[in-house]
Image (cartoon, rainbow, N blue to C red):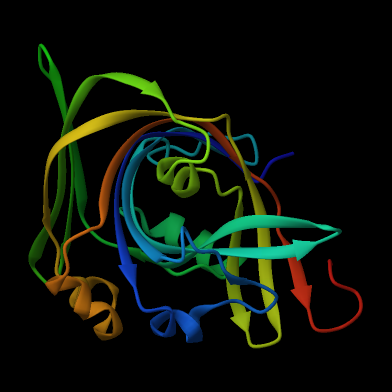
Length: 243
C-alpha cells in the first residue's frame, strides 16, 4: 500500500539558476546535483493537495490543503540507471499533523504556517495564487496563465522540472531517506504574468535570502494529476544499501 495517495493540482513553479556551491551542504548522501543545461536550479513551488489519503484513509480536515516548497534537483545512480529526484529545503503546509508525520517518518523539513489560495478562471485566462504568513508577513506567489493546457515537450526545461520521480531527504552525512513519487506526465499552461512577493530569508532561512534580489529564470504552471508517495528506503554507507 502506498504511504500517501492524493492529487497535486495547479503547480505554480518559479525556477532560479544559482551557484552550485550554495547547495553543497544540503545534498543528501548518495546523490549528486542534477543540472539543466549546466544550470543549477532551485524552484519555488506552490500547489494544492486534494483528496488526500494516508495509508488509504482520509483524515478529517486533512484532505484538501495548500503546500509551498523550495526544492532543488538531484540524481542517484542505482542498479545501472539514474534516478532523478528532488530535495526539499522546506515544505510549508497549514496543518500541524502533516508537519509532524512528514518530519518524523521521512525526515523532511516541513513547517506549519497559515495558508490560503485562490483559483480564478476567466474567459481566456486563469489566475492561480498561493499565500502564506511567516512572522506576521504575508508571502504571495501569483500567476496569470492561459486557460487551455498543452502537452509538455520531450526534452524541454518544463519536462526536466516536472519529471523527477524520487524524493531524497538527508538524515545525516551517512544516511539518506529515499521514496518514490508516481504520477502520469502532466500538462502545462502558458504563463503570461506573475507576482512573487516572498521574503526568502525569513521563510527559508538566511542562506536563501539572496533569492530576494533575483528574478526567476523561468515560470511555469502545471496542471498536476493523481499521485502516490511510496514507502521510504534508507540509503546507508554500509554494503546493505536499501533497508
